[in-house]
Image 1: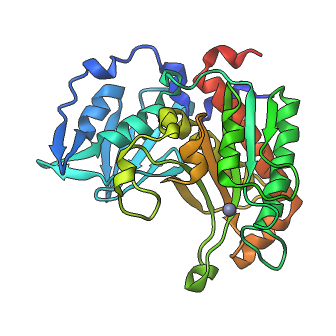
Image 2: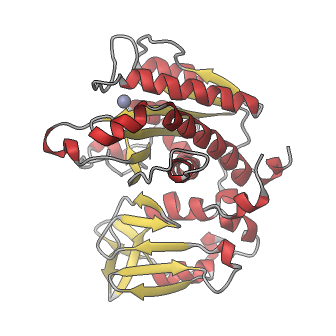
Amino acid sequence: MFSKARLITSLFLLLFLSAPFAEAKAFDWQAKRHASRTYVPLDRVKEFYGYSLVTSGRKILLTNKGKVAQKKTITIQFSPGGQEVIMNGVKFIFSFPIIAIGGKYHLCETDFNKILDPVLRPSYIANAKPFDTVIIDPGHGGRDPGCVNSLGTEAGYNLKVAKLLETQLRKLGFKVVMTRDSDRFISLSERVTIANKYRNAIFVSIHFNSIGGAARSQARGIETFTLSPEGVAHYGSSVKASDLRKKTGNQQDSANIALATSVHWNIKKSLADGKKGPGIVIPDRGIRRARFNVLTGVKHPAILIEGGFMSHPEESRHIHKSTYQSTMAKAVCNAIYFYRVTTNPKTKKR
Ligand SMILES: [Zn+2]
């Protein structure tokens, strides 16, 4: 069900170019220490991948344009001093800003190792093992409805999307485990316990967002969360002592970000598609880092999707529609399949 054309328009283009790179460890990175962290110069990153580095106004573009066929082009846009990085149209919130050291722009080693490289070279991710089971976790339920608006509850929408996703995944031959399949309460630790009973699995938690106060009519769009790496804070918080310790979920850091990239990109693209989907250009709030309990405790590659804002007047109406829900489910299913192919190239022929 995946055409070749579709595969090669993905973010994971380097899969097709993956052979000739020098090993990262042997490469002369010319790394520098700054504020107790290690940074690598963007011009060494450029050399490592054989890309070009172009400054365009306030942006720095790292691109393979002109070196590969048009369809395989990758462009990564950095903003000096900022943490938002756009890779082929998908927003990532890096853990540390791009900074100038000695007149050259540098990228923190954590962001190189935990975001940039796994996204560009998913077939190199050691822990991204073949899997046949998808654990779907519809957030909230029972006495915990999650966000509520005049049209419905988050627990209800989460379950609807989860069930649609379950059907889609079974059609592709995946085994599916639901942490809940009815409107009942289940604690966060129970969700983790269920997930960790299985082997060869990935974990996808489904939620919708809400915000109160003045931001209510403004905040909208999709977010995908992955566990903060060691030393990186929970979204919107400052670093605590416990953030410095490795959590169960951190063994999958690279796989987490590759899975998030595939899912986030697919949801965004599918919702914008006016033929197969509802044709909504949904704001991209980016792939972010968080320390939600399920992400911390699950041993499999894991992500948490926030599929739009129930508090936004217009977005709440979209979320309520079955086309929105089914498009989202289909997009996540396609993304999971695609993640499996790109991280385990042997499974391409199935
Ligand atoms: Zn929620």
